[in-house]
Each structure stands twice: as C-alpha cells, then as structure tokens.
Amino acid sequence: MSADKKIPKFNGPELFDETHNESESWYAFEIMSEFVGATEKLKKITPAVSVFGSARVSEDNPYYKLTVDIAEVLSNAGFSVISGGGPGLMEAVNKGASLGKGSSIGLNINLPHEQKPNEYQDISINFKYFFMRKVMFIKYASAYVVLPGGFGTLDELMEVITLIQTGKSRKIPIILVGKEFWSGLLDWLKDKIVKGGMAQEKDLDLIQILEEPKEIVDAIFNHYESIGFSLTPAERKAQLYL
Image (cartoon, rainbow, N blue to C red; front, side, top):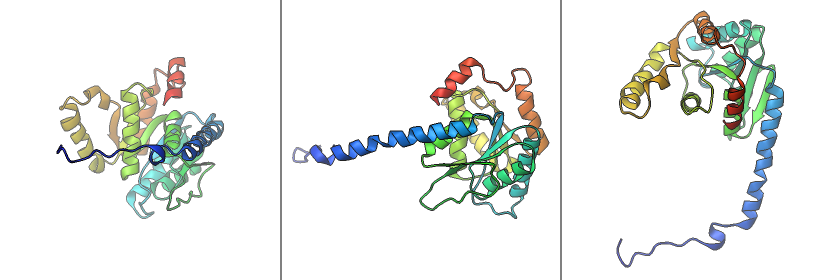
C-alpha cells in the first residue's frame, strides 16, 4: 500500500448507532414468537415428509401432476405432507396431500413480492424469517422429497445435506424426483466435491433418484423398517440445535 493512501476509519455513530442496536435486539422476540407458534401448531404432525419444488411451474407441466400424485400417495400412507405453501409445485404438494388421509401443511414465507398461500392447506403458517421456516421443514421431516426447482429448492436440499453431514440432523432419506433434471448435479457432486476431498462419498449415500410415487413411499418405509420413525432421545436433543 502506498504511503499516501489512508486507511478509512469508522467509528462513532457510523457503525454504532445505539438506537438502531436497541431496536434490533427486539427482533429476538419476533423470532421466539415464530418458533413457539410454529412448534405448537406442528408438534402432532409426525411422521411427516417435506416436499419441495419450483413455485414457477404451471398446472399444465407434467411435474405438477406427478407432484399431486406423490403427495396423495404419501398422505394415504400415513404421512403429513409439508410444502412451502405457495404456488407451482408447492400448490401441487398441498393439493395432493389434501386428497389423501394425512394433513396438508404449508409453511408460507412473507416476501417483498408477496407469496400468496395456496388454498389446499389444513395447517397454514406464515413466516417472516427464512431461517425459522427452514428449521420447521427439517425439524418435523422423516424424509425430503425434492422435485425440480430453482435456487430456493436447491437451498433447502443443500441445507438438509449439510445438517446430516455435520450431525446436526438425524439421517433421513433424501429423494430427488426427475432423473433428467438431477443427474447432472449428482455427477458434479461426486466428481468435484467428493473426488476433490471436500466431502465423503458416504455423505451422498442417503440421496437417491426415484420417479414413481409408490417407490418413493417404499423407499421411506424401507429406511425406517428397523429403526422406526420415533426420534431417539439423542436425536430429539440434536433437533433443538438445528
């Protein structure tokens, strides 16, 4: 660095606005309120499956009908079915779940361009905080079913992989629907992440690509056949630290 170039100094009200910091701390109470409200509404929904997919898929897209069928089969198999509560494939999830015996649940998020909750929800919860909503997707899920989607869908997928890898979440099935859509990502993860030593091959063991509603349900039941759906005391404690 040249001798005449000065390092800028930040102090006083530029960084430490006392009024702002005091008001910011009050957001902790909003976060607590969202957590308490959501857990009270969702504490009896297990076993449940969280299903993800694009909000931008129209009703005439083949994945829309497939998502309805998957959610209906999951619902009739005894699962509560959780979606992001919005349009597109989230709507298809709730529509299919509402046709079955289980609960249809939507975890909606308040966005600058308002996301309107779809009409097929037995339990509908609105979240202001993305991270609190993500906790609820994982906290109650016995499995993740992930259909084609954009950045939000990828975010949820990578979140649960990370939590399982780091031992923050119990091991649950992660089922990707759509071989043509997901194969490239799995190949990249194996070729770049695993071969590059940035993850272990076993970190991907829980991920499988399936297409049909029945084989998805069968895969979930096969995973829990010997261990059951109930959380162990250690798993229940771990869920508190998501």
